[in-house]
Image (cartoon, rainbow, N blue to C red; front, side):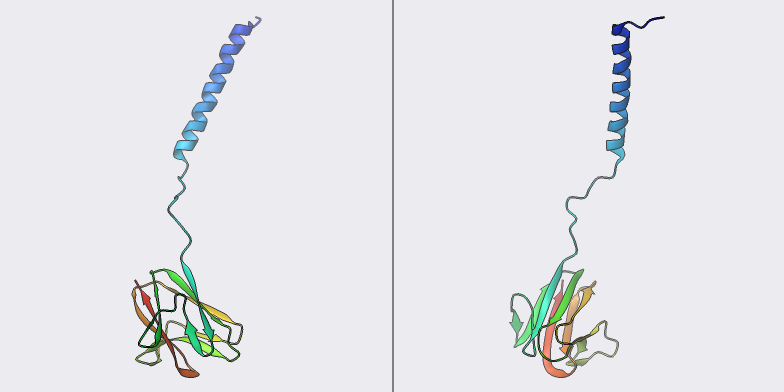
Length: 137
């Protein structure tokens, strides 16, 4: 039996409608992109002239202070000509169970991600007067 042009077109619409429904169902079940997600924050503290230099240059009682949100990765970058460390301190001394103790030769960098709120002292072991504070909110 021969198919008339009118019948062929009607069959084509069934295929088109079916494809449209499949595409619509796929679009509805695909995971939605989260437009509010962004990469974790990061910040760099420069070590130069035997000083921690955080962005913004805030200081309290002569001690450089960096205020960051929880989850921020801090990178210490030594642009000085001598070795330094970025070490967690407690009461002005290296903390025995320090979360981080980064040895930073000239030109080297090291990072730590602050995953909890609090105030953290940071110091340089070979240069005890070289200290800063990180406030994590």
